Amino acid sequence: MSDTYVECLVKAKQSGVAKFFKVLLIMLTVTFGLLVFLGLALALVAAVVTGVGAYFVNLYTDLEYEYLYLDKELVVDKVMAKSRRKRIATYSIDRMEILAPVHSYHLDDFKNRRVKVKDYSIGEELKPDKRYALYYEGGEKLLLSPSEELVKAIRNVAPRKVFLD
Image 1: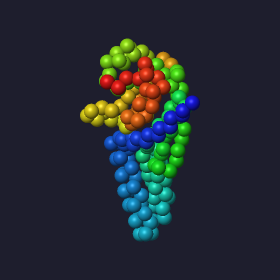
Image 2: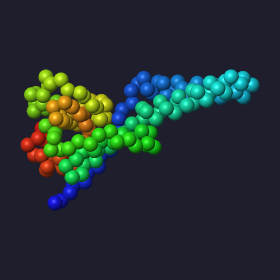
Image 3: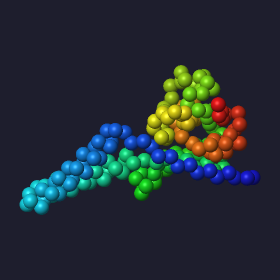
Image 4: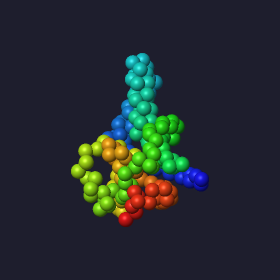
C-alpha cells in the first residue's frame, strides 16, 4: 500500500475590524505606558490590560490553516500567530461526498442543502477563485484553499468525487 503524504499551509485574511482593534490596543498600550512615566500609577494597570488585550487579539486573528493528507484522511489544523497549533478536525476521504471548486456546476445539486459551513480557507474570493468546497456526510460543508498537489492526491483516492473544472 503506497501512502501519499501532502501538506498545505494557507494564511487566512484578517478582517478590517480585527486590524483596527489590534492597532487601537497597541496605541492605547503605548499611550498608557508613556503616562506611567509621568507618574500616573493607574495608567500602569490600563497599560497592562490593553497590552494583554492586544496580545490576545493578535493571537486569535493571525491565523493559518494547515491541511495534512495521509492514508485517506484529511486533517485540518489551525496555527495561531505562528506559535500555537490546534487540531480542528479529521475527515475521512471515504465519507466525503464531493470536492469541487466553489463556483463549479458540479455543486448545483448541493446548493439547497441545509448544512453547517466551516470556512478553513483564505477567507476571501480572489480572481480566479482557487477555493474548494467539500461536502462531508451530508451535514458539513468545508471551504478549503488547497494546493494543486493536495487536490490531485485526493483525486487519486476518490476520482469520482473530485472535480477540477
